Image (cartoon, rainbow, N blue to C red; front, side, top):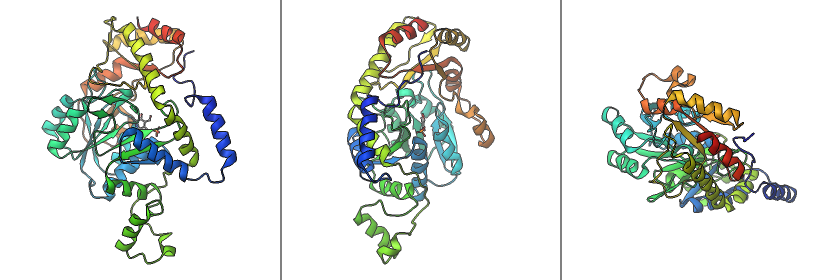
Length: 389
Ligand SMILES: Cc1ncc(COP(=O)(O)O)c(C=O)c1O
């Protein structure tokens, strides 16, 4: 059996031994110095001013939108675009917050929104914000998408939960918009078991994320920012400040275990990404001559931080043949994320307006993926190649 994922951590033995030592030697496990250090180091790796750590990628998505609402940069009812091929908790907060979700179609060649699909949508539907998903390590032409958003005053956010480490000539995936979210759930590029992050360069947004992550209070802000908030609301004493809640919030805090594991895994992230890219390219080379399968476009990507091996068959009928091959070879597979997310029960229950997404429908009907991870052996790669040749 070749599972979707083998190990919880890259260099697992080292990670677990390190974690045991950390737990034995520490007396504080709620969010503290390990999380702060992880935030600073992750932001430096990503090339962003701030990192704010969360207990999951879904929490990061939720907090990002809540913070923009708190700041008045988004308002209830406003139209927010999202990728037709995405994850539930990218779209659900749009509905939970009373924003108007507007799907943007994805190109089967890129398995992502490109500037072409975005321009098409913008012809009949203005957007206040675009919360784009970079799917399975791949991206659309993010530089052109950013230009379109800039020209039209659209706030660009990236859900980069599946594409940590992917890099385009114009910069890293996750660095094209106001902010980006990341997931550190098991099987993602960097695992802290559960965990997430938001990166941004925006001072005001960073402050609101910190407030909205933890109860609405100011305890995790630096002293100068605390003073500003306390002065603004006339909070006269340190005593009173302890239970002063400034804006709408949750408790989405990570623990020190997240911080410790994140720092450990971050040390090895480039090796991890390089191995995933090498595996993907070896598999792709072997099946690119097969005209029953569509090779995905990634010529616009400098570093392909492969999350999994996405396969798009030339037709939905052909998918059955390849799924049978993978089953026979005991290689675990999954649907192409949620397919067209607008066809999911939750979406049909709550969305008022219907949009055609032919590209995303095709990806959902003709696509599937199998795992790609650093521990994949050469023999296992041969088995996968055998299924695709
Ligand atoms: C695109 C995308 N966004 C958000 C999430 C949510 O991340 P988490 O599982 O850490 O909550 C995922 C999870 O896989 C995802 O793939």
